[in-house]
Image (cartoon, rainbow, N blue to C red):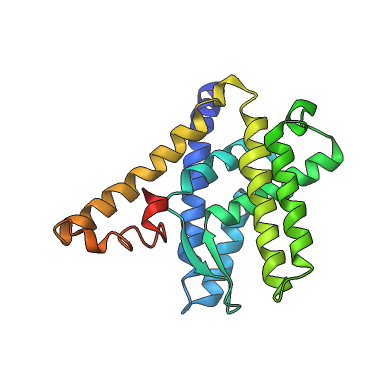
Length: 215
């Protein structure tokens, strides 16, 4: 009975992670009941931390699934915006991946010496150099930080994940699945305007700011 139960729980891990992220998103917008919100956030954070440290693969897969349906929210009252929940999860993955690299190098030398890797590193170095001459260095540093997060998560971490044959197609498949509800919502919005091409520029918002990115 126990092995069967464990097998069922294994299949439920990724859906539970996604459910937890949705609950966090809802709670962040619950402004009228701050005490209840903070208590619920603390409760939801416990299993989320479990995924961060013990089920990092599901964390990466969940992030890929949520990328298409992420929407921009403001971080507190700072005016800074973040694509939630994908960028939030990507930042956590990047931090954990960077820590794991310092503890035990896991990146293959072939990956490090690959032309794409060299170009990405050169791009970061160039951005750092240009920051010295920037009129708004804080903004430039934030841009560099997001670039590093994206490269650690969606390049290096994905490469490590795809070393396992079971996950070769999974990143593309999960992104495609996550895109399905966005496509349906955008189609519905298009139909509301009788598929008028003049509304295509903002029809994919709030999921995609630019219709060309959505396309």
